[in-house]
Amino acid sequence: MKKIVINRSYGGFGLSQEALEWLKENSEDLSPYIEYCRSGRLCFYDADLFREHPDLIAVVETLGSEEASGDHSSLKIVEIPEDIEYVIEEYDGKEKVCEKHLEWW
Image 1 (cartoon, rainbow, N blue to C red):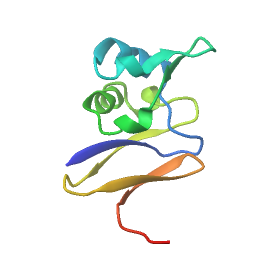
Image 2: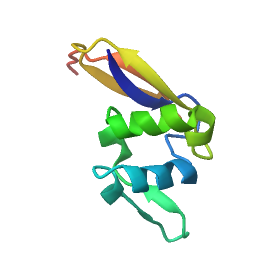
Image 3: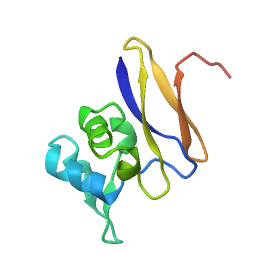
């Protein structure tokens, strides 16, 4: 099964400061994408590129959803079959994983 981190609340995907610090210390791949913002808080750039990354999965599993989630998010790990192509759809920040299909407009 393939694991994917999504946000299940309105407001948008985000990691807590504790989760960002954990990734900064424990992930060689993701730490370059974590920097201090103008507000002085840690920010995770290009997070959407890494929804399947083992270190992102690990921080949510290690800290738990409540501790890993940012101020306006509720992170969840969703498992889907390995061979499924997917997209993450969202409405006002609340996300779901959908099987990718073709569309013509």
